Image 1 (cartoon, one colour):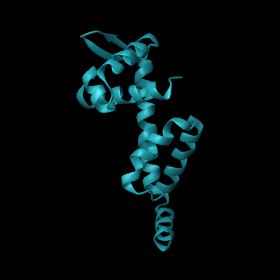
Image 2 (cartoon, rainbow, N blue to C red; image 1 turned 45 degrees about the horizontal axis):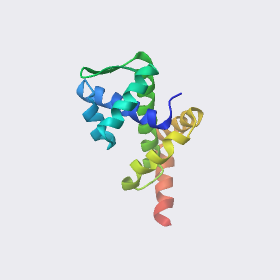
Image 3 (cartoon, one colour; image 1 turned 90 degrees about the vertical axis):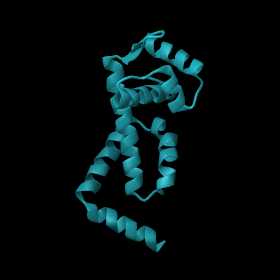
Image 4 (cartoon, rainbow, N blue to C red; image 1 turned 90 degrees about the horizontal axis):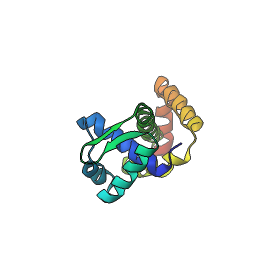
Length: 137
């Protein structure tokens, strides 16, 4: 399994490729707010671990393994944002909260949160009750 830092890179590379069709070292550095040299080192490690193929000055592409993990990481992030929004976490806190917890939850916990989000979507009255309780506090 990739480390939390590797996950951040894979997730961002996946997002960039989905949005732009490619991911350059400079784009990744800008997105993650790190130095390009740090990106190059991590990209080389991700290449060695077969999450992507990297050729200097030619760019990079995710392997099948990298795409699968990237898609799952984006799902995890979006699911946690959706969940925190549903339970009433202030919008301005959601991104930072997700960044703080996403690497510390097991995939089993993520799947159970997914089940809960699905239940809440199917039962909007429960979400409304929760919002009413929060306004009374």
